[in-house]
Image (cartoon, rainbow, N blue to C red; front, side, top):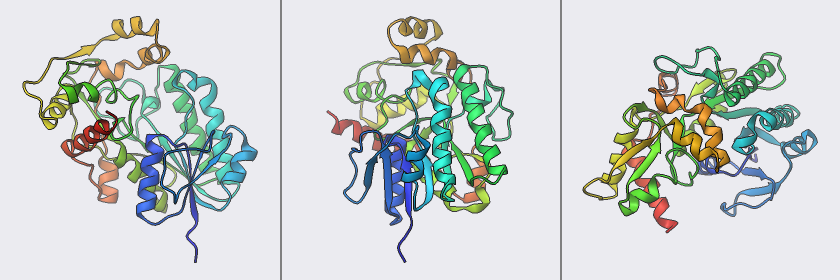
Length: 312
């Protein structure tokens, strides 16, 4: 019997991580983006499609056992475009009885005192956090109403091969490789949970395969939380750089100034509480339910540095 296809909306780093795990399990993969082109193995089908159009998503989800929502609009357009994008993909999955696995971040909780757990109320205080909260509520409502089986996997700021725009991405690792000083976002001496991109992808695939997981959100597994300074220091050590160059943080004022010229920096300002206060994610529910541990931080950094080296 032919294995049903799994459909991934998006071809970015997280979508690629999902794709790699599906291929490892021998599952046929169809990926969707606007151009129909992506750097993927020959075995992967990449098709062009406007995911904002429900008629298009219904067509693209045909025959899909599981649909993964890893697509997103530009960061500067989340409130205006993200809800419609996700609603269209949900309709496509629902039309064929596909399980819908949605990749989420942690914006919907808002500022939190203590660790972030899945049962926290949605108390977002920002535009993008409120958008995330509304989208999550819509997913859970669709599941309760029997329209589609939904499960959400939530990751923190991620890093890894292919990851560029993250707070632990291209502003960090190229400098590490050549031994230059690093400027990271926020207070680098506070604990901050980072998610390894391949762990995120594997977790989403697993969530789509376990019926008991449906109908709720799960925090995907992360390596034990350390301060941003400790993470970057470890990266320098893995890269063989000694002594370790200066590591400093960029506060809210500097981000505001950067936002005068860089739209993405301007959009980051409202989320600065994640970097000016401790930001620790509790992933114990996932680890206890699935028996899965995260990639050790040193190993994840090794793979990340190796990928950045290939980019010159």
